[in-house]
Image (cartoon, rainbow, N blue to C red; front, side):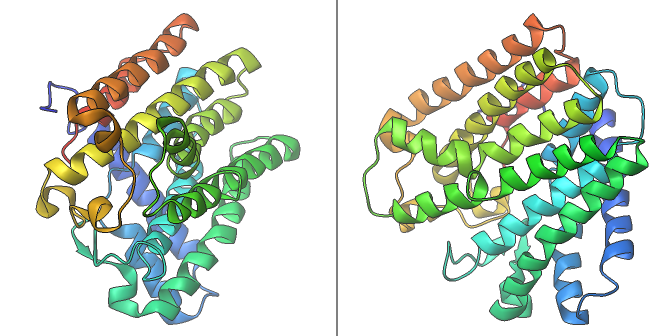
Length: 302
């Protein structure tokens, strides 16, 4: 999994990450004033550290690919808030019990379990509120703004991330078939990645055919992302990952390398990325950036 020029260090990605970071700063300034100070501080800590911002970038790129011309940064930031919430709760002792995230101590190691739990809980309704306001600020109707909030919350809820996390916890120590493992990860990891691109399409008022193509792309690269994570868990170091390596083995989880071997897992991830990009190409939506992000997902080292 050696990078081949598809990394996200180019000027486009640097600029987009900076734009998303500004939007997250604005989110904190606007929405955290009424939150208990220590909880608000924990939310800032979770949001403003280093991160790939891939979900936000995917939303922005899908929005533009579908003809959107407005400022979608605040909407993209709302997706990052949901993602950050999931990391805060994933790391809790009752979940994956991890000490390191994005190269620094996890939120509960810094602020304690009660504050980290409260911070994660608070971030979900705050993300919904900010997504609504961002959608309306873009000139979208109440109906479209409502659809965007609904889709974001569906991706985060029992039919998405939370449901996938529950299945993942139940599967610890239980050998899964490939089909069952993919079901877990299409929810736990894939749902929010898929929502990122489809929300961009909704915000651009794209027709159903374009939304469906982006849905296929998002589902494919979302699963590929998790497969790459499983491979990296056994091939990369903690310093490279910015989180503790070897956690899947420690938690007795079923993984793609265990089922398919490392080479087989990589081949599966590449095939998924090819399928997702083909779906966009068939619809005339495959931009260089959307292609590059998809390729980076399976070639990254963190």
